[in-house]
Length: 339
Image (cartoon, rainbow, N blue to C red; front, side, top):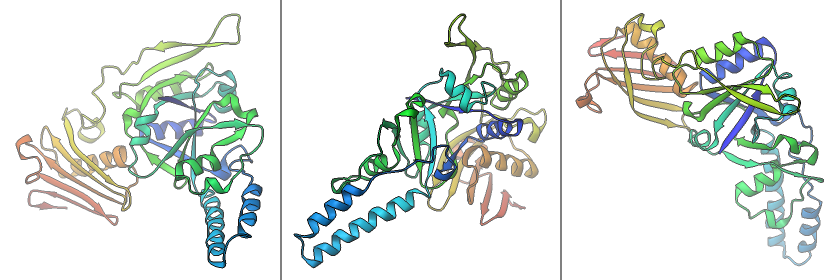
């Protein structure tokens, strides 16, 4: 399933958004930061009435259990306020969305593969389309035994019908903040009608080698509709992303690499890599390259560990070099050399 995120604003905001694309993360906003003050509003009157009615027929022990159910619901509502929400749309050709969320068509729109986006994260994401109604949903006793997905959907998956033009699909995260994804989740970029050419080129330059498709949004003559026109990527022949060490690290030397194993432990926020290099590099270059891999694959992990190999036959055996960050302490070993 393809979903879309409209972006735009001041020069600083656009540059910040381009940086997040380059570093493969999205920002999950706090509920308080969203533009609808009725977010997560529900009606619990029915739940309260049902609880009191049933309470008449229960002994003290079961009344106590029912009270705990009520407290658990209230706690979930409070916890949800700390959660993050990443709002997406099912439509990339809506003139109102371009006007409201892409700075009057001066911004751009990102196309994601939702399945890859969700599978990039080893923790728990909740994802669902928004349901648009005249009134907030009612929480009832029958909702409490529901699986978390269904209950959270009822708590955070409804909005007023006035918002229906957005065709929103949202991702609920445990907390607000950055969430890193596999780079191939990003499929296409749509440039707004009024987007500056310098920003278009900057996006294509920063995202070179990733196989992303680009489109220019245009007006359909004598109508209120929009259409798209493919844009030729001027960096189409650049090396594939994450296959060659960047020039700013090794100069004009062309040294390729292959990531043969990757693992991320969410609870301890540790990333592990096994990397096959085509050639030796200096210790200084190795440290810079390791930082590059950390930023582009795991982002702001607390602990990071890489084993480097020069021979495919030696993979998972004795490493040619090892780099690690444990509790902010950096260590780099090449054979018997210690940094």
